[in-house]
Image (tube, rainbow, N blue to C red):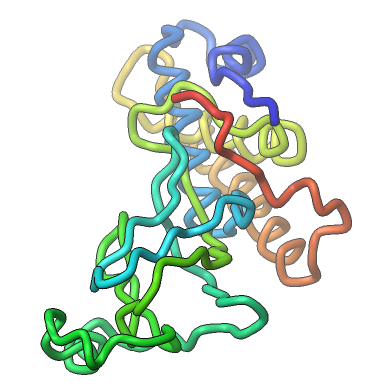
Length: 213
């Protein structure tokens, strides 16, 4: 699956925010992409399985190299969906992790960090689970999934222009910033509605293991 360097969008932003340096534009595009992913879950991954290791109370999430977790949307064991519980409950349920008599087939989970998940019962044997996650670009990412730059190009451009115009620099313009903020919010609302209705193109549920940072 392809990815796109954020710098390829710089000329489109520069047309309306003249004078801004390329590195500032890339940073603004990244901020816009992060906002879009956090608020509308446009980057969803479900292709990489989670390896649940026997006897381990905490399991690593299969995160891509250029992505951070926004939300763990679901976990499935074979055809059964595991039930999410609050973090404090999962610790109570797990009890003494060293007591193998309490291990079994996981039915509950809690994402207690942005990189791992806890299961109960603690797995009694190693197996793979289907893991669906909403992701966002890392704070230092230089590329994002191509599907996002194609489908939500306007959102990225409007968001980047908003952040640039809010800067106290020669290209800053608070009045224009408000204009771009309204456009950005409109695109985010559209993305939320699209997710609510369901994507027509299943490929937009991004298979991200091939993306570089």
